[in-house]
Structures are given as C-alpha cells and as structure tokens.
Length: 455
Image (cartoon, rainbow, N blue to C red; front, top):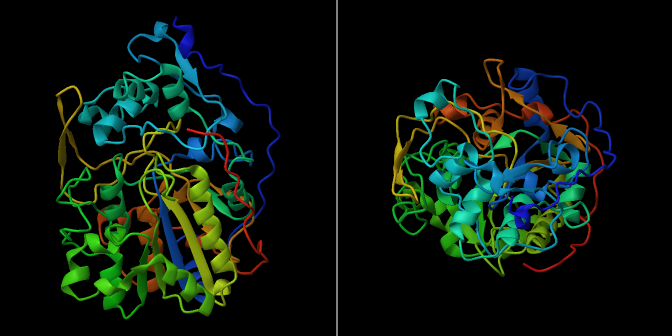
C-alpha cells in the first residue's frame, strides 16, 4: 500500500440537530389543492444556479439529521486505482482550503469513470439495472487528470468537504429553510448542457461545452422557460454578471423575438428587489469560472460564492416582495467532486444521443437516460419549513423518484399553467407541496462570510 494516499478515514462523531416536523402543506405534490395553495402564496420566483459542487463537497459537514453526507454517514473512501485496491485509498475529511487549483474532470466520460470506474460502461447493463454506480472513481480520475501534481493534495481536492463553520451562509440556509437530500443534475456532464436542460427540459443532444452550445451563437432552437413565460404574458428577467454568461442567450428565440434586452446586468437585480419591481421569474447568472468569480466553480473561492448567496438573500429578504417570493438555489452539476449517492436512471427527454471520445481514445455514446450526481438545492421563502431535509419526491403517477433540475420546470408548470416541455420534465417530481399554508418569520440577513485557508 502507498501510505501517501491514506488520508486518515476518521469518522466524525457529531450530534445532528433534529429535523423539524411537518414542513409542508398537507396536500400531495401535484394535487389541485397543493397547486392552488402554491399559486395563492407564491407570486415571484427567483432562481440562482451556482456551479460545480456536490452535496458531499459543500454540504458534507452539515450535521442536520436526514442529510446523507460524510459528517453524518461517512467517511467515504475512494481507491487510488479501481482495478487494484492494494495501491491505497483516500477518505473524506474536512477541507483546509477555500477552493481548488486543479479543476476536476466533469465531462460525461469523466463522470463515467467516477461513477462506474470505466470510461465506456455498458449502456445495456446500466439500463437493465445489472450495472450500477459505485462512486469509487473520483480519486482515480483526478490523479489521471493531473499526473504531475502532488497525489495527496489532489486526493483532498475531490474527496474533502466543508464544515458548518467554513460555510456559514450555506449552514444558515440548511438550518432555516428546505434542503434536498436527493436532488441530482439532469446530465452527468458539464455546465452548458445542464443549464440548457434546466431551462428547457433537454440539452437537445449536446453533451459538452462546445462552440455549438454557446450564449454567443444562440443555437438552441427548442422552447425555454423564457419563451413560455413571454407567450403566457408573464414577466421575466435574466440578470448576469457578464453578458456572455446570460443563459437566456443560449436560445435562438431570445434573439429572434427581440427579447435579448431582458438579460440585464446583475446590479439591476438589487435595484429591482429594493423597489419591489422583480418580475414573475428572475433568473440569476453568477460570474464564472475561476479565481475572482462567485459561482463556486474552481478555482473560484467558496467564500466568494457565499458572499453572493448572502447578498442575494439579504436583498430579497429586505424587498417589499419577500412575502410572495420563492428563492431557489441550486447548482448546475457536481463538477467532478465526490458524492457517495449513486445517480438514478431517468426518463429520456427525447431520442437524442451524444458521442464523446474519452481520454483513453475510446468512444462512448450517452443516451440521456440517467441523472448526474447530487447537487445542493434549497427552497427559501417565508412559506417553507424551517430546517427541513426533503427526501425523494413523487411523480405525477405517484412513483417515488429523486428530484432533479427538471423538477423546477415541473413545479413552475403547475404554478404558471404550462405543460411539461419533455417526457423528462413530465416524469420529474414537483415540490409544490413544500409550500406551507402559513407564513413564518425568517432571518433578516445571512451571517457574515468566513474566508479561510488557501488553495
């Protein structure tokens, strides 16, 4: 065994605070009663999509009962080599630095290695359930991606987690609002396909951040939430830090219908919130991706992302519209950071496939029939429960299922009376039932941010 890889798999014996009872209305998700209650309480939805972190990474140190993570259920370990366990392993422990310099692989084939230990897993075996994810290849893929770097440091990058004290804003959100235990990205791949899928129910066969999937090209032809809202006489705005990162501009419709000016600088969001002039749907793009940006995408600092979360929450909490607002915080994908929960299969959004050449030269065709890893997701509002961990949801057919990015479109469809864009959205569980019948007081502001450590 190579001792340099053994990072000390020490379990943390921490008392977990109890989950509060009855966080929601008494109605079933998707029922007429639940939808009517949501429509009565929620008039404005604000959606902030952060970047590239898993539940086990940024929420790994949250001690709240019901959230499956390293501090409550770990530690979790990955071998250096999935084919030869004698090479040693690394296990999850508290991080000592604010971000990482070596951005983990988060391509589709990179996710394959991380989930299955193979760049080209057998699609038939995956579909019939005989091949399931082990979540054991994260360390191996990070070592392969950066062969000249220090092995122990690389292991800590993908396996470690942040403590409650290191991420006080996320901790306050966890303790004061609703956090999901089983929320997955729609696609086990990179940013742009996931963001487009979140907004439209499909990536239209795209699996990487290539030139054809760009906010500059405006090449996505299918219906988005922005088009749907405009055609339903609903108002919306996409606030951005950098104009090229306004996700509404992925879609051809945004430009061809002369709606591009609804993408606005982020500073105007704060002014609209202060005046009580936010539209029905507010979509927020953080800055990305690297040092000095605030999306939490490596090599950006976690603390800079926490500052953004605090600023947005504080602005909404002080807004005249707060009492009718639902603030959703989620992440586009896991970014190659370890998460121990295997992603489930999912209904295909369409008949598209995507073929990618892996790092070893092999080719893999992805059929869009499974979700990506778990990503942190919160519902924040005076109308949701306090410190509640939501588990799996129910589809419209009554089946238990993990939540995903498509759950947002499913729920907004109930709120604003539009049909699911794709079969994936139709079969996604909604979260309308988490809107309660009574309003409660909420923190007037998020706590101060704590910069710490280095890279």
